[in-house]
Length: 67
Image 1 (cartoon, rainbow, N blue to C red):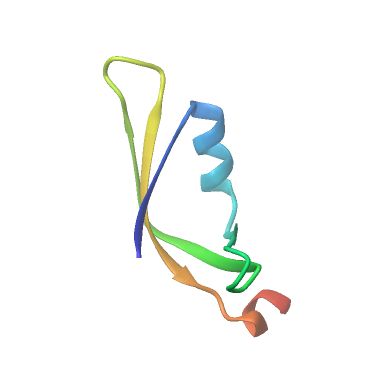
Image 2 (cartoon, helix red, strand yellow):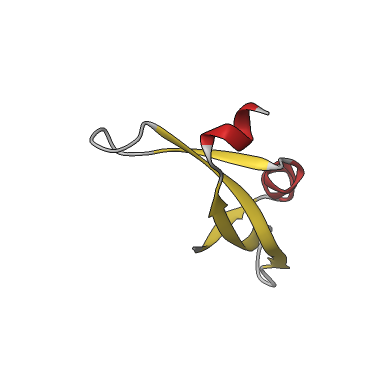
């Protein structure tokens, strides 16, 4: 799945430094799902101070997270 995050330099740096991201889901689905980032690219907004991080997410199985 391809996603984009928008944020300041500090926020984007925090996302890039983490090997696994946890996302909270809706109440009826899994409460939390872990993802790894692949094919990350960061671009700057030429008119402001926000950055755009685009990446592919791959779900991490529970066994891989517990290792």
